[in-house]
Image 1 (tube, rainbow, N blue to C red):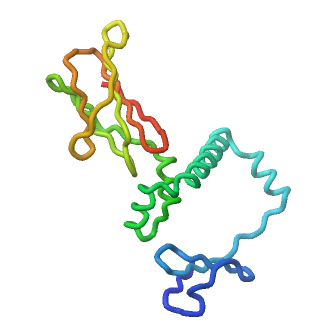
Image 2 (image 1 turned 30 degrees about the vertical axis):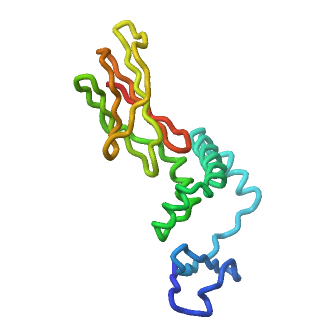
Image 3 (image 1 turned 90 degrees about the vertical axis):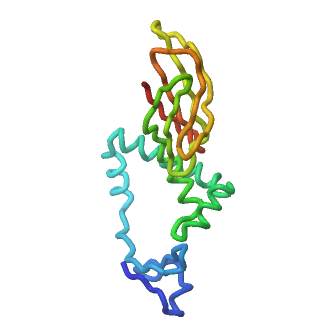
Amino acid sequence: MTRVILNGTIKGLRGKMGNLIFRQLPNGTTVVSQAPAKKTRRQKKRAKLKRSEKQKAHNSRFQDAVYYARAAQIQPLYVELAALRPMNTAYSLALGDYLKPPVIHRIERGEGCIRVEASDNILVTKVQITMLGQDGGVLEKGEALRSEGNWWEFTSHIEGITVIAEAWDLPGNVTKSTL
């Protein structure tokens, strides 16, 4: 891959010319690469038939991510974050956010309080706590409030046997963790 930085005649060039593809990156540099070899219709069909179920599921999930990113790229949060990161666009941030679910790092139980540390590549929108008794029935369920940093706190005076924490991000991905 060749990068062209200061050449004024190629700087504004985009698209395909012969066997070369010219791309402009968000930071203004132009990247020149060779076009891939064209595949015949038969080669494409054979490649599609050889895909495993996991590959087909991933392709379907990626297609859903593309639909989400096209609609979400105008949201102010993605636009502001893209302005702060010179090599990212709002579209690429939304696409990555859809594909990466939030992570629950740990759950801490204290006196009258349950703390959950949850993070995401963009934003964790809510954390829900469910407390189960010995018989598996729900004793208490509610949303935790954001505290400092990535910490969320849930106030409860009931002592449950099992604590289930669920974290949501902006596209709606959910992660569960049990203590």
